[in-house]
Image (tube, rainbow, N blue to C red; front, side):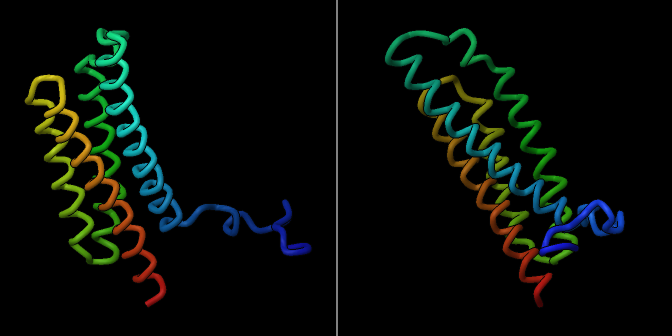
Amino acid sequence: MTNGFMTNSAPYAARVPTRSTLRRRLDQFGIGLAGLCMVHCIVTLTIVSALGLGGHFLLEPSIHRVGLVLALVLAAFAIGWGAIRHRSAAPLVTATTGLTFMAGALAVAHGAHEMVLTLVGVVLVSAGHVMNLRAGRRAHLG
């Protein structure tokens, strides 16, 4: 270390992200993905309703299926891994409830009901990631 900054001469182990850093990044990515999902839902409904544009692409069911699969995989890794490490079930239960709402949104017709179910689900999954980050910090400090 020179002047508080790591140099290239620092040991390799000091530059490799730790497992907790990777888990934290996965949670942060999950929160970002949830935010993108919320923006997609709101913008899509606004554009399609107000202008009648983009409905064929923005309302494509495969976008929602892919988003749900990404959310499931990311939550399984980040929140599942966190639950094993910090032994707190609350993030896992919260995120699983949110994923259930998101899956339920796939079963209804496009429109307001789908958006509400998706947004509730996304908020819960994002809250699960935030809870997972906090539980990880508490376990690390305690």
